[in-house]
Every structure is written in structure tokens, then in C-alpha cells.
Image 1 (cartoon, one colour):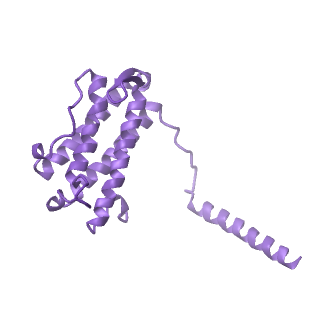
Image 2 (cartoon, one colour):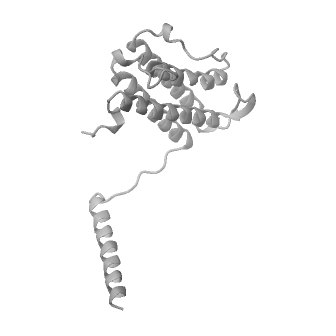
Image 3 (cartoon, one colour):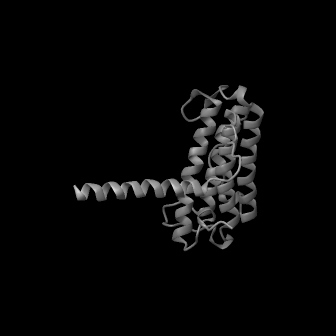
Length: 190
């Protein structure tokens, strides 16, 4: 019986402490949560979010390490960025009725860090402009995915490319770590 009482008092203390800690973290005064954004706003915010992360990496990684590969079989850091940003055009181009790229952008066509940074920025800006132009009413517009050769909704393509970009973001985090560097998102915030 004593052990049950001790356990009960301990659990009560944990609950009270958790409630006090949670209350201490909420803002004081009249706190009214923001309403959720519309579907296209949420899509755009997520598109811009992964774009911001990849752009930050492109701008941050030392240019003298742009051809770094964790293993010989891997793409270089620069090639990973070019691949991730170039893939956006496998979504953007068909939606706009433009021919899809024939493959990944070539490193030889983007010889400097500045050229790669600009390409990454442009690919995400082009995607953001397309999402804005569609708005909520265009999220269900159909287009033909060049990989599956099937019709998909506009929003499916955007979410799929964001997932793809997120996967390459994760790979680039490993490049940072193997190179002895800390990725921008992992650094303490000021």
C-alpha cells in the first residue's frame, strides 16, 4: 500500500510539474491562435521552407568543398544541389506545358558556387510563382507526371517534389557532418 501511495504521489507531482512548465511557456495576455492558411498557402509555405534550407546550404558550404563526396560513388555536394534543384523542373515544366529537362544539370555548366546558388534559388522561385499562380482553385488541376506517365493533381506534384528535396536535404546534412561542418539548420539560433 505504501508503494502505491508513493507511486501515486510521484505521478501527481509529474503531472503538476508538467502543467506548470507548459503554462510557463505560453504567452501572457490575450492569446488568440492564428487561423490556418488556405491549402495553397500551406503548400507554398512548405515549398519555400525546403527551398530556404537548400539555399542556405548552397550559400553556406565552402566553395572549395563543393566537389566533396563522402564516398567516390556518391554525387558531389554541388551535384546533389543541382540534382535537387533541377528535379523541380520535372514538375514546373510539364505544368507550364514546357519540355522536361533531359536529365540532371551538368556540373560543367555550373562551375562556380555563385552559379549553383543562383540556380537553386531560381528553381524554388519558379516553383513558388507557379504555386501562387494556381491558388486554392488550381490545386486539383491535372498534368502528366513524366516519370509515371499518368495524370496527377498539381498539389501531388508539388508535395512529391518537396519530399524529394527533403530527402536530398537529409543527404546534404550527412555531407556537412562527414566534412566536419555543422549544417545551418543545426546551429544554435540567435
